[in-house]
Image (cartoon, rainbow over all chains, first blue to last red):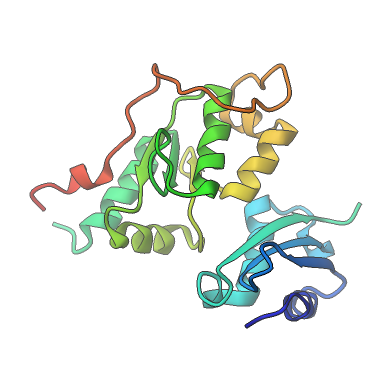
Length: 76
Length: 134
């Protein structure tokens, strides 16, 4: 079962320079909420920003990670 | 005749409806909190939209995901383009970007607590009905 630290580490590895906060939404270890601020997001639509994060997990979304709720933005 | 009538019907529905929401359940009877919130944001703006319930046939979701390359439902399309799911639509609603994208006036007040049904809107599209005789 993935932990919030696992998710944070993997997002940060995929998006160097990103600031990532992950919380376990329900305490059940499968519904997560993440806030990701990454320089890679600059100029991208929200869809494209979320895709960059979802791509880190591929088929795990909907599997072991039942839900990953995202808030994304480029740095100020 | 296409080898994949469900995918064709979904692509056609996205092309034909300027605002279309794929969701679990219907706007009147959503079967998932995320779908309910997304439909609620559209209803709060009073914009007419087509809605497709993905639950009756698992192939609808399968083919939708293949088209959109987006893993989760709900999915909102405006003018053929995927706008997002619950997170994005909710955030855009709150910032006023959703109203802008839809070309409607943003609500004067803060988000309505309980969006009203819009009886003047089009009946939700039943995509399974388009597959009759296939």
